Amino acid sequence: PAPPTPPPAPQPPPPSGGADAVIAFAKAQLGEPYQWGATGPSSWDCSGLTMQAWAAAGKYLPHYSGAQYDAGTPIAVSDAEPGDLLFWTSNGRPSGIHHVAIYLGGGRMIHAPHEGLTVGIQQVYWRYLAGIARPGP
Image (cartoon, rainbow, N blue to C red; front, top):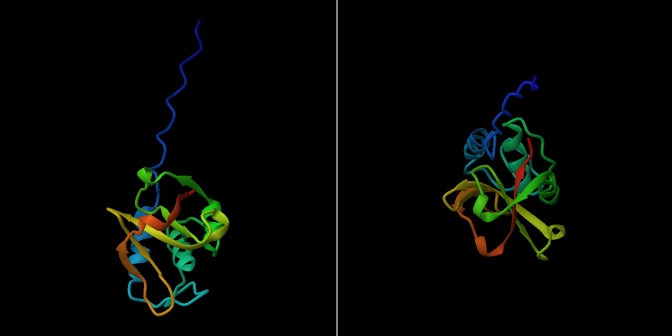
């Protein structure tokens, strides 16, 4: 007799599992000031915001944009989904990553830009984008 047919493999999770929680957390911080090294609850730097937003979805990320890139899976721009992390670099390589934002979809992002500005939503500046990474499961 032939061996039994194994059950079908389970469906993989959506590309950015937990993206709704990530985005909801980040949007709740809109208007709060940027402060270098800050991880909340009332001021943020770029990687502090992304770290805490993904923590709201149950995923640990380190508090450094370069380390967050390393902790994710690089993906193509054409595959970007809401919740994915966008990165910019000063030298064209991952070693120069200096900024991270959360992709919202539709060419928009949410981030803590720099001193003097607040957490906000704006169009992605694709020209200078170094890469996109999706936090792992």
